[in-house]
Amino acid sequence: MSTSIKQATIEQFMKVRLQNRNHDYLHPSYLMERQLLVAVSQGDPNKAHQLLHSINEERAIISPNPTLRSVKNVLVSSCTLFTRTIIHSGVQPEDAFLLSDQYLEQIEKINDVDELFQLERDMLTKFIERLNKEETLPYSKVVNQAIAFIHDHILDDLTLDSIAQNSLVSPSYLSHLFKKEVSVSVVQYINQKRIEESKYFLLHTTTPISDIATLFQFCNQSYYTSLFKKYTNVTPKEFRESHSKVGHETALS
Image (cartoon, rainbow, N blue to C red; front, side, top):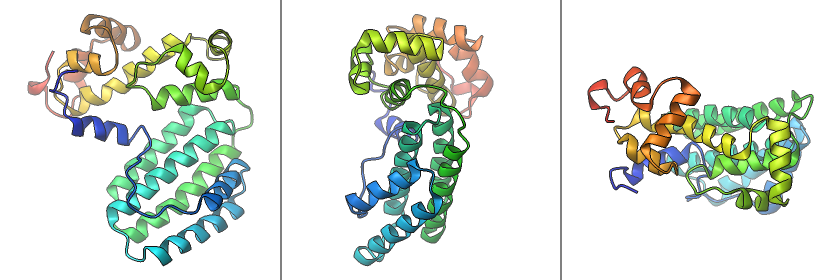
């Protein structure tokens, strides 16, 4: 991969898409965390908030003066866990990730610890409400798990075998089930998701399009461009020039 893609830029992207593992603030006990996620999966807001209150009391005793960054990291982790839980409980992954992205953005904007803890309580409520609104399961558990895995490993060299292994099914079974439920193949879904996610770099960086193509595992820029146009009706360059927040004059082909 070209070194023109700064590691900090990739880390910023991954922060809003994948689980933040750099926690320097005490985690709740495993048992209480599991109980909280069970309450979320059951759509029980009262029990969930009681458990969150107990968890925060434990945090306050052991770490009475947490840093702003450490609290943000905790909320990012909580958001990831809540997202994964409601997906496994039947919420369509795209809906869950949309809610997750909204809260991750809010977390980064807030610079007051008390406001962050209030946001965590609000976040817990909204995730449970979203689960309780889900009247029917759009996809099976296997397909939901596959979609979640694709989302979390979008920058990796995804294969049908690796996705199926994570979902504990055979590749042929996953391929058949995925196409039946989602109406596109696993490969098509991965390509669509990568095109969608690549827009981040087109909008927020001056990274050359050839490097963006490499980052998202496309074999070359021409293939990336052809797929991008297939799904968006414009080329990556046209998209960047029309929407980029970093300025038209810095857009690179």
